[in-house]
Length: 89
Image (cartoon, rainbow, N blue to C red; front, side, top):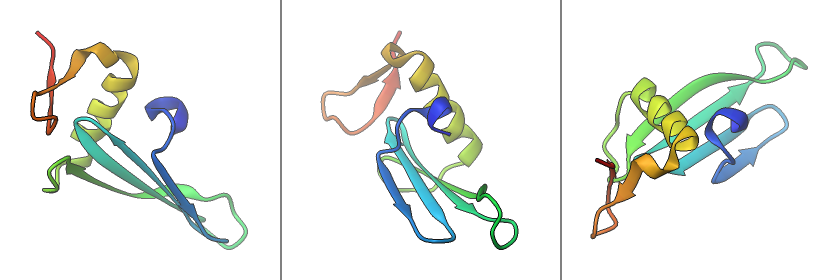
């Protein structure tokens, strides 16, 4: 995940689970890892995504935007109000 989206902006873990958050424009992506069986390596089991303003959004769209931001960071520019990211033209 980190290789794909960059460093997590938030990370929390327990003895059996891990939560990584990628809060980069234009959306916030939360990925939850749980082991498929006790003692196994945790796998990305649940994904949640929302826009910067808070409404839910399609996780696949957010993952694509996060990946694109990582590969081409100049494509996303902040509006003057700093509230949303827009593709550069």
